[in-house]
Amino acid sequence: EVQLVESGGGLVQPGGSLRLSCAASGFIFSSYWMHWVRQAPGKGLVWVSRINSDGSGTGYADSVKGRFTISRDNAKNTLYVQMNSLRGEDTAVYYCAREVGGGMHYWGQGTLVTVSS
Amino acid sequence: QSALTQPPSASGSPGQSVTISCTGTSSDVGGYNYVSWYQQHPGKAPKLMIFEVSKRPSGVPDRFSGSKSGNTASLTVSGLQAEDEADYYCSSYAGSNNFAFGGGTKLTVL
Image 1: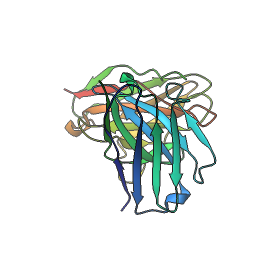
Image 2 (image 1 turned 30 degrees about the vertical axis):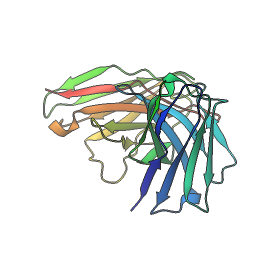
Image 3 (image 1 turned 90 degrees about the horizontal axis):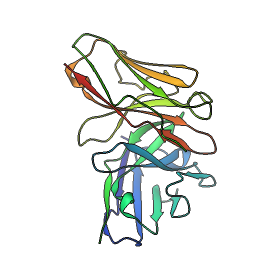
């Protein structure tokens, strides 16, 4: 069974940093492109970042470019996003998702990041 | 990067059909056949309903169908059922390792 489990969320002050993790199981993690998608409370889905299967290619939404870094450790079956210079508008539930054919076929349950003083 | 445009709401009675549109540009929806649709119930993670414009993942009822014409993609739900009431989001590849989501459509089953 495919499972994606996010962790690392919590309360952080504006300007602070946080690293989220997404532990993958039930599939060959190193074969799939992966994404981070976020959803602010009561708002819609927003794409954050994508990484290819071996970690050599990445993409970012303009709103996080230069502040967030996506990475993966295929030996540990884990996806990461390092979030720096956090702002109030980064407050959201962050989901990791597995992609095939441009579609995000599997999603984790999400982890909540709250940026507030 | 711009969000794709969806109507904020749609509705239909049980058994009816409803179509939700998703309008982008030639740089995203119109330029690639990588349009997908997601269903999200309150408090739950999104669920993929359609990928590559019109393909259904296993387990998704054939009442759900997708299409695209130019810069606009559409999701049609036929034979509406109460459990179809949810938020629906479109997404498209936008080139250079970028993606975009629509703002979401709240589907109400009357």
